[in-house]
Every structure is written in C-alpha cells, then in structure tokens.
Amino acid sequence: MRFEIVTLFPELFDAVGTGLLGRARDAGAIDVHAITPREFASDRHRTVDDSPYGGGSGMVLMPGPFADALDHLDQARRGKPTHRVLLTPQGALFSQTHARRFSELDCLTLICGRYEGFDERIRGLVDEEISLGDFVLLGGEAAALAIIEATARLLPGVLGNTESATDESHADGLLEYPQYTRPEDFRGEKVPEVLRSGNHAAIARWRRKESLRRTLERRPDLLEKAEISAEDRELLTEIREGR
Image (cartoon, rainbow, N blue to C red; front, side, top):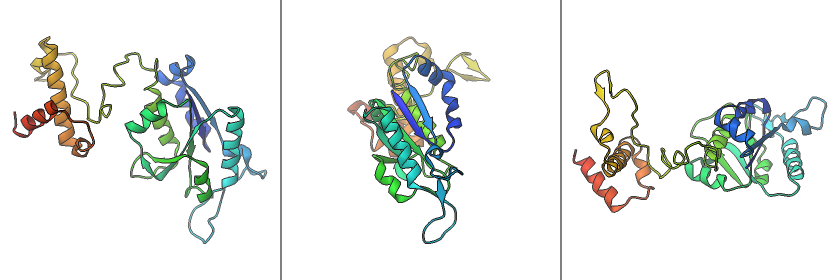
C-alpha cells in the first residue's frame, strides 16, 4: 500500500523507517512518500502561506502549492487512483472503522496543515476530512503518522501475529480485556486463576466479560455502537449486579 503525505516538514516522516513500519517498508508491504508544497511555490522564497482576507491573526495556507503538489503526485502514479484526506480539527473523528476502510485502498494521500489552516478552496481537492480528536496540534503530521500506523498494521504481513490486529481495543468496538504475563505474583497481586486454568472456554468467557466490563466503566459510549450478542447482554447483567 502506498501512503502519500503532503507536508511542510517531510523529515518528520523519517520515523516510518523504524520498528515494524520500517520492516514493512523494507519488505515492500508499504511505501511512504512525503513531499512538501514548498517545491511548488511560485516565488524564490518558497512561500506557501499568506495573511487572511478580511483580516485576523495568523497565516493561511495558499491553495496553489498544495494543488500543484497533488497534481504532481497524480502524475507520479500515472493516473492510478488515490483517496485524499485533509487532516483538520474540523474533520470527522478518526476511528478503527476508518483504519479498516483505508487498509483496503491501494493508495492513501494525507494532507497536513499548519498555521491557521487551509484556504477553503483546498477542501475542494480532497475526498474527506479527518480529525485525530477534539484538540489542536501544531500541524497535521502527528495525525498523519497515527493514521499510517493504524492503517498499516491491518495489512497482511505487517504484524508478526495475525491475531493481534483483531484482538485488541476497538477491533470489535470494545476495549481490550486485561493482559498478564510473568511473574504469577507481583507485589501481592496475582494473575487471575482462570488464566492459569488451561480451560480455553472459561478463559474466552472471562476475557469477553472483562472487555465488556472495561468498556462499560471507561467508555460506555462504545457499547451503544458495538455489536452486542445475547451472551454479551447476560455478561453485562452479571457485571451490573456485581457478579
């Protein structure tokens, strides 16, 4: 899968060369290409921003350099399609559903903002707008890196354990159950007996119940959207009754 990033700071994406993402890139599972709209500025100072019409503080990103950068990427792909995403606090909240949808694409183009934001006409060049959360960053680069990680880990061959992508928080709409490893007793806190029992059915039931419990306690809003089975409803009843 190809990730294209339009950013004023392409060097921030050198981090993609480390860890699992780096191995995935070396193996050819992903290709990450970052360019700066400064390359397409029309003046010798490589200007990509200007003061806003109507007055106000800060600087606004100009449409020309960004449009030309996107055109350049289109030409480099030789007409192959991509999905363009504008990273902005005004976009839809990014979720695991987005990551799964993006992972089915051949190419994803992420456009990072800075300063006071984009000229409104840049919005007409993209397919959708995404926000990482209800907060403001210095720019869209951190959001782009998060989206690349969340999407790439769903691709075949990126994770060593294929179950890891489906057995974690948000994979099925719920938070993940508690995890334990050695030692069995750490400062008086012991690993739950059921996890040491070898009873796989009992372990699966405990994990599902604890996943539901954690979601109910920490993110009850997720339960409204998750697919809840009849058995899940029984487990939720037990949890609410303190069993």
